[in-house]
Image 1: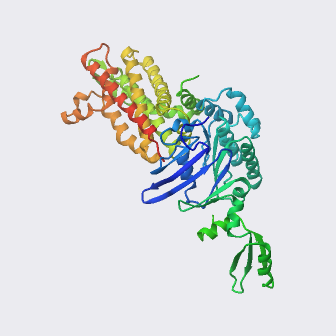
Image 2: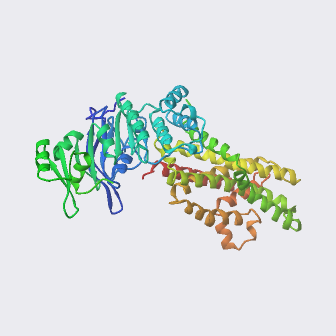
Length: 287
Length: 247
């Protein structure tokens, strides 16, 4: 499946994407390109514009200006073509709580005209370890089971692009790890994935490239390794006699150890993470 | 390949079947018309005659029209609003590769089914309790049109209301007064001229006129035409609201 306009070597293209709600500019001239098969992360604190960006890319929200395309199809001009190519796991659970797991997938399969739906639903429920609970009403599911079912539902029509909006929010570490493995498996199958997260480890572990959003603007975009190299590889942390935590970025291990030696005790050396990148770029924390 | 609207209709029917098993759901669909039937039909109505008929025979078709209106309207207005604003399940339909008119058709047909179900219960009570009440073709056509019209209006309310409280406000200010003043309980002719003019603009008035006809006359024909006009306008507007859905 591919569309018919220039730049189709990129699965997703966003150019100057802007969305305002009254006086508030939720997304401000955001541009990026994602090649097929890549896992692209949008990282930022709450209110940075991650979910609004996803909503525009998935046809739920019309941008005020700018344009975006998926597989060559313009999202605003050709929404049906887009809907045939995407799967969405939203931040909020939007399963039908009064229906069973099986019924939820069946309705979704009918809506997306999935052929051979019964076989595919069975395979998908096995893949997310919910086959035994197929006839249970979703309202009785735990948060982790509901997230897994949301992922199964989104993957049922075998979309070219999978959107995951905070896929592991509120999940315990074990279930989060399970979700991570499922996302990796989806990547291996060749799908392009966009995920928003404010879990630093998740972005580092899963994403080929990360776009950092702050107050609606895309302030940096690169691989996690390059972003970290941009600010320095190590952080030296120590507490001053006044009780203040000081974090100093060092370009390499030698510099970090040299700095640590200057302090007598209470010094920690660690590798930088994407949160350090975010703090360096914005002066804010990701919460 | 099934029609695009079919999954939406089947989803609603699955939910309806599940809710129907709860006593409260069935009871709430029935309670208002049954109370009116007992209070006005069997209580007060024993002493009243309208057009040479006992009051119960006058009231029953009106209760069928009112019941079809409230049940077609309320469930869909409430469902769409809750699913859009709180549960976000409406977004699943909007993100599916189907036309907005298919979402409209699926939701409207499901709402009609609920309206027809509630009306059927009143019809059964009517057939059992009144010698003059019968299933006429006018009743059937008007019932279908009325369900369709108010289901479309329900979709519009569900799409426009900013919160669930707003849907209740629309009901209290529009649907409930229409139930009382549009010829369900007494002929509109008895109202003052200015109010009568306003009442004739309301769709339920025309449902009440045509549902009581036994032969097609000009008045009945015009009322049916007005119902068709309202239905078409509401359907197109509802479809447009779904098409322009934008968060």
